[in-house]
Image (cartoon, rainbow, N blue to C red; front, side, top):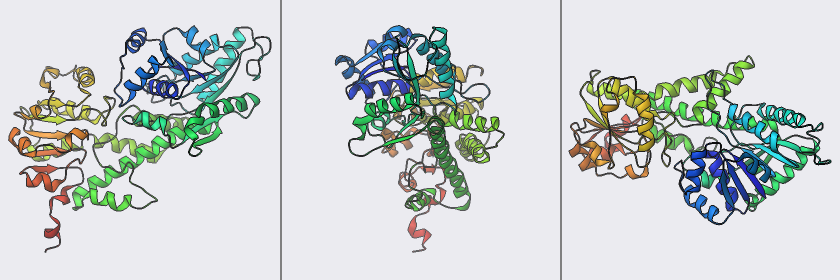
Length: 475
């Protein structure tokens, strides 16, 4: 099938690569000429495991092209996906300017019957706005029956489809190629029926083992994406609140996680306590859903609490650091392992590490940083984060080797649970630090193993784990 993807960002690139890999003829359009040149030269502007190889293989096979020429790209696709960014606007709503600009561009150029697919995460009602823009664009071109669903005398027609993405950064390629569900929202008219048939054809290779497609109306499809992210964010924030309480009442939250996760009604997903969620999705999507409710005269009290809890959780390690060293931190140095908001990505958007780094710099601290892949991105965002602090950026150092970041540091702070950090040389860590203590913001380590190495351990909700089983049982 002939497919056009508008937007060479995270979702657009993964969608382009995966649809091309199953045999479709894909053109990816972006208005950023430099990005297109970089992609055509074999570069990839984001880090995502497996993506670079997939892009290269399909470009070489001739199934995937990148262009900044809208005429070429839109004329190519029978299905045109809008995969542009929807950042949080100043008022908390999702900023739809890129999505709506893409719709206007499609309307000005499409010919024949075109399925216009909103892949971006968009608020309820966006597909209807896209429809109106397409309709207006065709009327401006002199076509009176823009959405009839049939071509008459060269009449361009269309149908708008909502097909939200459910990709986890760090596992996006696998998620796309082996989806747990494919949500397709369409209209009930003839054009919508025709569009659904084409969408089913497109996704047929992903349904060979069992049917994964969930068909619904446009608004329900749009809402499903926000509801999913809201539910997952809620689990994270609830677990973090329980972990903070566990610290106070002498409970090991890891044992609690195992106990409640074994309940099939709950499951183990998104039950890990830590320093809060970040990234490009959960923060802005929770906020956008809250704002949508505000517009409807409803208050989403649970999600407001989720948002507040997550904001506070990003400072939990600072509280633990100040409890150990005192509130006067001037002149101290801390090593930090992990900067990205989660492992297997270089995404620094809303990363908890940024909150802690700024707080430490404000207190006169030096920080020595390491991350397996996110250091280039971190250098850029931290330069902006610290621009208003005198000599703030000068007190941030980046180290290519994790152990080297420890030299002269008062303590080690873990902010991202990268696999490379899971089995370190604890003796070397102790030797490199001025104070033998690890502040583990992701509960990566077993407190007993750390303790046996002569290091003090401060996790999130794991203080009780410092007591050995036999001592607890008085054996």
